[in-house]
Length: 193
Image (cartoon, rainbow, N blue to C red):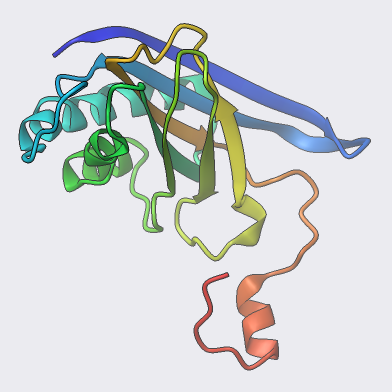
């Protein structure tokens, strides 16, 4: 396992839309910069990559993000930023498995909703927008938000940045209403939008 660095950041919002927020609203992310053993070549079986990194990274990153959050977790998300000589599938393999998801949820005391994600390829310093949703109910609109993260010198072309993100609340001043109530009012049984 080759980890070049781990970076943890916290964003605190005190004023949004020219109005103070109750809080502050905190979002934290912990990011690992890892070596991509499959950079520059095609590898059919990604199991060794998953087995080497997924569980370890979830167990390492989520507690760091939680400590930085310094609050109860209400939202979560994940991301993978793959260097230019890698495939997006390499990052996806690391964060879309039970080996990643179970220890991630265990580290925050549960979590029932879909763990939202973003994956992309980029050069060093590229930002990645990590989507965050409510950790129990992904229909809770107030918690649909995004945390932009970046590391100035990562990923190098043969690296992957793996991100675990947490939030202590939803967006500031949510005013678009409850999705379930709207669905009931409009007679919609199943809608993902």
